[in-house]
Image (cartoon, rainbow, N blue to C red; front, side):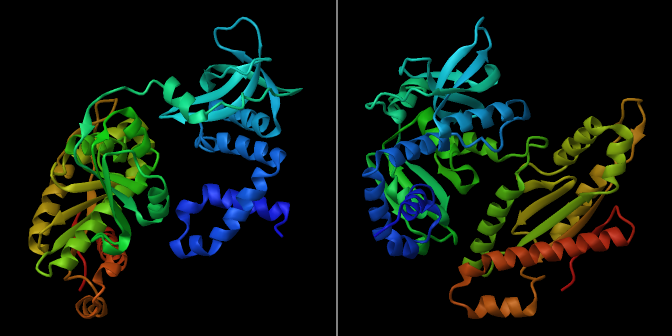
Length: 425
């Protein structure tokens, strides 16, 4: 016999953690999940609490909301879970409003609260940023009507663009941890095909292909919801649009996470074709903290942009953090990569960047360089040649080649900065 505490735990795990669980774990827990759902459905008071938690989960920005709305967010969350009305002052309204909180929603960067006024159960949406003050009352909140459907309401109210256009070939690459979730929540399309992780050439990922799926904002919202765990491969127009979210806002280069994905993909291409090579550059601006401290962070942002402009548009490049940059050079030997790295170093050194006082501020960079497979340790090279499951080595190779380039960068710093150093074999 399942206890109430066990039922709630299994119910929450089933609802929120399924997509993170390996398939063998899901199979082992399936009977307990079924028993827990039956228990919850048989106890209305627990079911009502669970529904409030479900609505709360629709807003994934509670812990990352802007500072000015964070205190409002916490109070709304508290009111929702404790089934209390709130007394709020809303921008544009002369008098305070009694409000019943039904759910918290995030659409792009807009934070919304779903609920109803005073004794009404008719749902409305308010923008959290327009709530000036908010206090919990002692009165129990009015519940939405029994027939209220959250998804239908959002679909009708959030102004998704309506279009009859369809995408004939949609391809999305997902991280492997989402496999169970995507299988359980397939997109609505004329035809859907999923290539599972074990059959997909990119280790750690799987592929969803769909034909006849409706194009529009709802599809984009669905893709954005997976963040960096999903990448559109086709069509190109949608891929380019979605990739804007994967770019560093200061430099318009890739983010560190997206660069990791690109590097993994290049490694697996090389593992499939032993003739392929690549080079990895790591750039670090010399004494950049001093440049920022003496000239201001706005000038520092200008420097970062100028450095990004010194990188060829067709190279995979990322701002890896702070003043560090990474560049992936496919099909490039050590000799060729040294020429490219030296060109970048000279371009950065020769830029006459002026601060607010009209003074030229010298900016230089140190660069570390490593190549695949030359700079891999001998034991790892043997492992690649002997192992039939070479795709599983991609993460190990990525960490090793990155470490080699990083050590070369450290050597460049030790030798006086403003130079390019090649990794040791």
